Image (tube, rainbow, N blue to C red; front, top):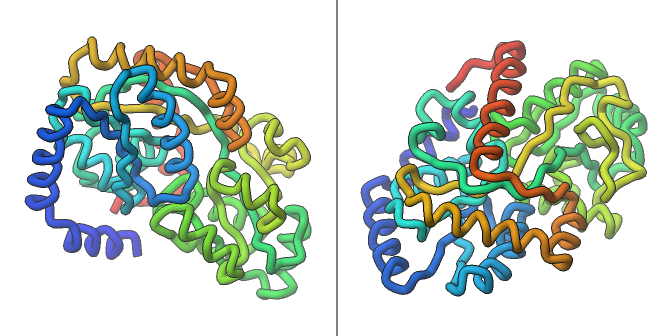
Length: 328
C-alpha cells in the first residue's frame, strides 16, 4: 500500500512544472524580500497552526513579510523536495517535525532528498509527544476501556488513523496491537487534519497523532486522548497517562519541531532567522500559545537541532529495523 501510494504521488506531481514554478516564485520573493515558510501538511493541522503562530510574529522581528505556504502530501515529502529545489538565498524555509526529516529517509528508498546533504538546520523551537485518541463515537474514556471496546465490538480488530504512511504513529499502532493482542490496522491519511475530520464524523474510531493535532478537540470533548508518549505526563494533559505507565516502554525519545533551509544558504541569513525565532518563542503570547497546543517550547541552535535530529534518526533506525519493516 505504501509503495502504491508513493507511485501515485509521483505520477500526480509533475517535477519539471513544480520546480519551474518554484524557481519563478522564489525570484519574485527575492525581489520583495518575502520569506516563504513551507509546511508539508494541509491547512488546519497542528503544523499549520504552529507555523502561522510563528509567522505572525517573525514578520515583526525580520521586518519583512513571512507567508506560510502549504505543500501538503506524502508526509511532507513534497515540501522537502520543494525546499531542496529552492534557491539558497534565505527566502525559503521549511518548518518540519521529525517525520519528514528523520523518518522518511528511513522508510523510503528514494525520497528525493537527503537531509544531511540537501538541508541545513536553522533552529529548533519545541519538542512534543504523539498520543492515541478515540473518537466521540466510542464510549471509551481510558486506554483500558478502548482495548475492551475493540475486543467486544470488533472481535479484537480495529482501524486506527495515522497522519502519514510509514510514520512513527503507524509503528506505534503496530506496537499497541502487539501489546494488547489486538489486530489493529493503521489507516494512513494525507495529514492530521483529514484524519481528525473523519474522527469527528465517527468514520474512524481512533487515531495517533501529535498532541498539537488533538488538543483543541480534546478540550472540546469531541475526541478523547487516552495515552501519550514520552517519559512524563504532559502539562497540557496532566490527567492522561504515558504509554510507559501503561506498560509500553521504549518511546521516551520525543520528537522535535525545527526550521530548515536549503544547503548553501548563507550563514548570515541562517543566524538572522535563528535569532528572530529565539526572540519570537520567548514572547509570552507565543510561548503560551504553543504550550497550550501541547508543545514543550525551547530554543535549539542550528548545531543543537542538527545533533537532535541525528540522535532521533538513530533511535528510530533501530526501532524500524527491529520491526522488520523494509524500506519501500
